[in-house]
Image 1 (tube, rainbow, N blue to C red):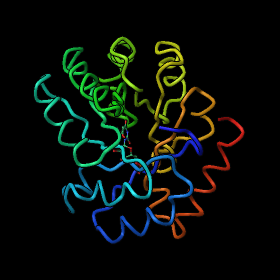
Image 2: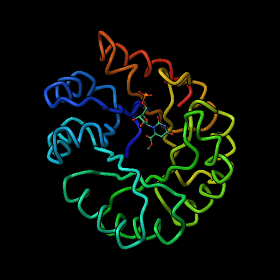
Image 3: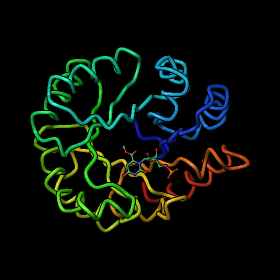
Image 4: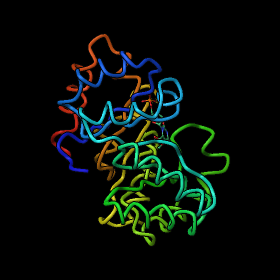
Length: 217
Ligand code: O7M
């Protein structure tokens, strides 16, 4: 994924026309569009190819299975036109390696969730976040997902993975995180949903975020 703006749109709407209209409006401000269960379950897998004309598509299915099933899922998602798939890391090295191997064969990307951005991530995930980050680096994934709600954790994760892997970071705006703070902490991209797609003017909301991050990219 090429970094021009540092912004990834999380398009968690459930209506096809709305999804297309918002993508059209913000296409000039985003490096990728992340879509997941809310949009795909309500509209269908063909949403991936329909939106791919606006920006590269990151399929957020948080894949979390045994190696063979991970591979089968990623195969279908890439076939549908996605450029990247998000997988969970807690399933361990073999599950991750199966996804990364397939992605490399197809010149696609895998991003691995380390620690999530919501408060409940402190119950279990935070304790294993650093180990998952190290595993993602060892497996040569394209990058990790780390929380904009805790820039200090993003800085820790950056130390572990070095500069080969990217960090894509959700939790800006609606969840309380700041785009410029998390970029300063070491994230390469922020992932933003509600603050853009619920804004009266989604393009303006996206532009504001891009302008805020510009000097820190
Ligand atoms: O900006 P929001 O809060 O409306 O949306 C954030 C998006 O990022 C939404 O699609 C979440 O599912 C996703 N996300 C998190 O909010 N926190 C995480 O820790 C991880 C993700 C995510 O994208 O995982 C891949």
